Length: 338
Image (tube, rainbow, N blue to C red; front, side, top):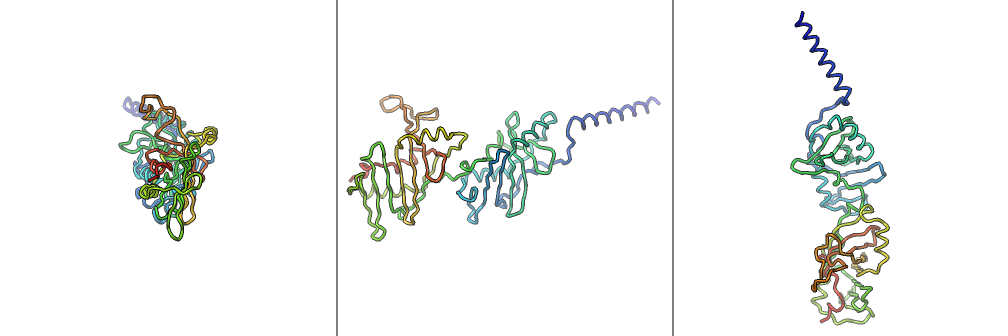
């Protein structure tokens, strides 16, 4: 009798514990394997669509030549695309969401989650909701569409969270390439220094004779050094921006403030096929990241000698370019003399 009573008590305790667990934590409808969030073969991925609750949307599409296009109009940054694809391949479930954080995580995913659809052609491979970082910042809240339970996702060996890899602004996905023009394809170059007009000049190439001339700021012919001109023409190959600012890192007010200033240099390049590119460079003030803060006499600098703000005509936002990348383009008329 006593033994039966003990067994009954144990059963009642087990049932009570089960009820308590169910009432305290949403019941798990599916148990995911470690790699269920990952894409095993990312070479199949041809399209990625991301959207959030604020109305921001980004569409990334793979071309036949294996390049990627952003929102159907601009070339994507290959480095960032590769990072995103490797994230899809490498990410794993670190652990389920603890019961104490379940409602918080689901709230974050519902309000701030990035809905990410991954396609192979027109076939939807996965839809993942990407949330914010965990409190310890070593994992990311994520949810597979159709599930009612989120997980903490990480990449083994990587310390940090993955949300920053899912950029939601078009400009952040834009390829950083500014100039990539072969010398024989250059028809005209105009480099102007508004604060020092005498150093401005224009390079012109005759379309039929292929003969070139250099004109100074007054339009007069300059006796230029052939080798120096040749070096200038070769300088428009593989020239990249350091990066682009979006509106969260460089507001419209800040942008308008820079654009109200007189540019340090204005560059216009026209190709033989008629394509024209324009870029204006503006001086930056010395900042926390400036390495060279003093001139050769030990005097503290005001203008950053290493970087410029850059405004391209085809985008509203600003870019940052480094002096050592553009140095060979930023020649002056006096530099070209024999």
